[in-house]
Amino acid sequence: MKYTGGMNILTIDQGTTGSTVSWWGDDFRVRAQANVDFPQYFPQSGWVEHDLEDIWHSVCQAIRLVVPEHIDAIGLTNQRETVCFWDRTTMQALGRALVWQDRRGAEMCDRLKEHTGFIQGKTGLRLDPYFSATKIAWALQNWPDVASAAKNGRLRVGTIDTYMLARLTQGAVFATEPSNACRTMCFDTRQGIFSQDLCSLFGIDHTWFAAVRPSFGHFGVTKSVPGLPDGIPITAILGDQQAALLGQGCIEPGMAKCTFGTGAFMLMHMGYERLKQPRHDLLESIAWKDAQGRTAWVLEGSAFSAGSAIQWLCDGLQMLRSAEESEHIALSVPHSMGVIFVPALSGLGAPFWDPYARGAFFGLTRGVQSAHMVRAVLESIACQNAEILDAMSQVQPIVSLRVDGGASANTLLMQMQADCLQVPLDRPKNIEATSFGIACAAAVGAGFWQDLSFVPGLIQIAERLLPHAHSEMRAIRDAWKQAVKRVLL
Image 1 (cartoon, helix red, strand yellow):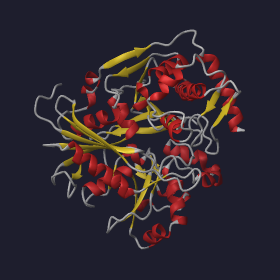
Image 2 (spheres, rainbow, N blue to C red):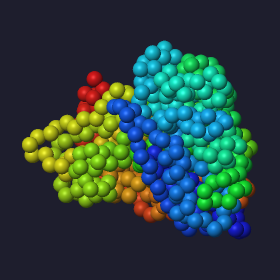
Image 3 (cartoon, rainbow, N blue to C red):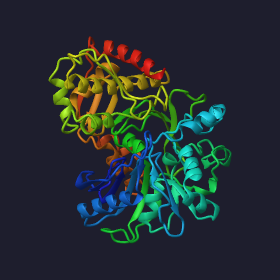
Image 4 (cartoon, helix red, strand yellow):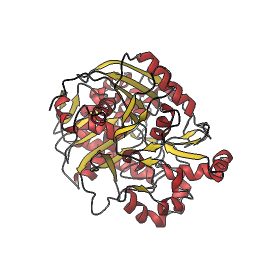
């Protein structure tokens, strides 16, 4: 099926460190694109916050930089577990957004361990501060403005998509969709509702959350958005990793992708039925729900530090002038000289799930130079992803893996990844799969296409990286596993 009419789609990709706005034509090529960064706030160790006005201004500035002439539909994708609090009447933020990397809910997770099986059975998620529920509970207990709004019936709680939709429609629409709702740890994925039974565990009222709609369809229209006319329909919303899965053409069971962003997020399409038994080392989430009511499922493993570990080498240790320089510096030495790095800068995600783990270098000697440490950081990213893929392969074999995100441009890292996984890596020409995926979703939601079957035909693979059978990455991975055991102790 080929759509032959005119189509102009604006996509908003609201990410962890910045907001990207893209203008797509009917050939699904970007006509204009702009990214605007915004500040990150770290009040205490393990705490990560965003100012909602900073986020909104970054989106508006990016829209003005793109200067779209005519837009038929808007697609919105976003960082997922980050949670927002605002006043239902004034739209005023009641505190900063608590970011998915934030670990302040760890103690509450410890107290609720006896409910782990119940939570995972309902949500498909691990009991972990990564998700929104314990962040909401913390805000209710520690931020008087949030507690007061809850008491007076003025509180709105939602993930970034819900807040952005409210701002785009000037408060007219309070809604979300399943790929975001399922990351709150308050959403019963079998029943498709925010569950009071789940919410009660965290001291949350399920009525504070938005109505849940299908991922593709009419959500509302723009009103008073700087740089945009009123009345543009918003026709699709997806969490960023689900959007990237779609943008990589992974619409059939067994197809998998890994997005290398702030973290590394590996998702495998599982079809239209939930697993009968939950995986305790992986997450089972909703990919999307279409207008016909069909729910697509994914198996996911999340590594919390990937691009952020490389950025730390720049900002924290000042070993690099830019993240892009990491490949050149790592290639300046033939090996990492026995240095092993565990990238637990925000705890360890799948398959270890330890919010208290902290990053560490092992094997340092006087002969070690900064280049060896840079190379060890790249190796660590590949090793932790291999652990996730091994867990996924126990459910369903993966023949190849598609990669995207900023760090996927690092060919050395991608070759390390292929060697570590011992599967081919397909790198598309367009590594901005998240924006592309939500553009495709918006086209379906607007009725330009009937379904998602057209997406794989638009994917162009730029390069296939084949694994080296006798790579040293096998030995490095074994040493890395031993280092992780020491961190987990």
